[in-house]
Amino acid sequence: MANLILWRHAEAEMQSLTGEDADRALTKHGRKDAAKMATWLAEHLPENTEILCSPARRCLETVAALQQLNTAKVIREVKVVEYLGVDSSVSAIAKQVCNDDVDKTILIVGHQPNLGLLITRLIGIQAGACSVKKGAVWWIRQRHLFSGSAPQTYLFTVQQPNY
Image (cartoon, rainbow, N blue to C red):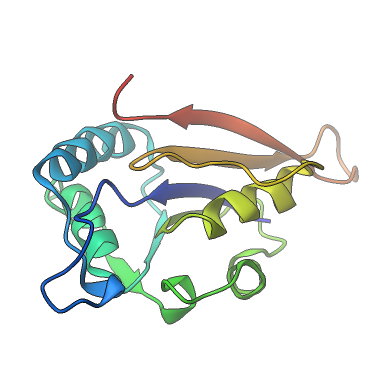
């Protein structure tokens, strides 16, 4: 499995002007939280991180905070993928992002409950699903304790904009 960084979109308005869930925009507070987390991510992401984003407006606005920090040295491109959309499933997401490349890092910008369900699936939590707070980042890594051993999956860090 690639190293996965799961970033839930920041706080969004309760309803969009169109009435469509996918059209909900970030609130002022959400934009502020997205900028905080983008700053943290910009400092910690490996340069070759693949960034995948839900097509929902609130996710696009969340990841835009990271893109605004692009420099001449680091250009972070975002790939918008339907399997991270509001109507997706954790199975569809896992099918696309879980692989054998432990050297790869993927940043996913998406939605609850699928992010929490994916975390639960990957780190083997037995009771219920994780609750990923708005704007939070969960970083899951894999490592081999020794050559030829089965990979060990673990939670590396959780960062929240309010703390």
